[in-house]
Image (cartoon, rainbow, N blue to C red; front, top):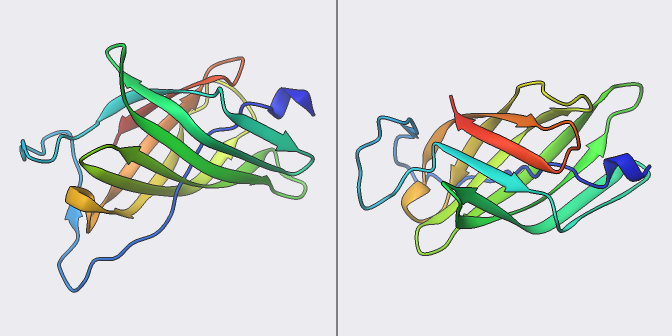
Length: 145
């Protein structure tokens, strides 16, 4: 299925180490931990074979500047028109964010991915991102809910 060659990244994992989870939000004013609240992913390093897909180091950009990379995998759910996905967003010198959730096989549909936690300055953070694929499934828009 060549049309699935794109696939969106998602992530999971969390290590809170006894601290209280902090909600990640666009209002987060911690300048030492820049918050990527809206950014884009371009699917250039993705492969899909039958019911499983993966990608590694797809570029993440904001205002035309690369801010990180995305890696992960998705599987097609039996009898469904959606994927179950797990991914990691890597932000150099800041930390990683882990996301998990369902992705639609339809373009221009908002899907919500849970932010399970992270590393570095994102450790213990929670929240969610809305993700939307374009009609060619080669560009994804992320927005912090």
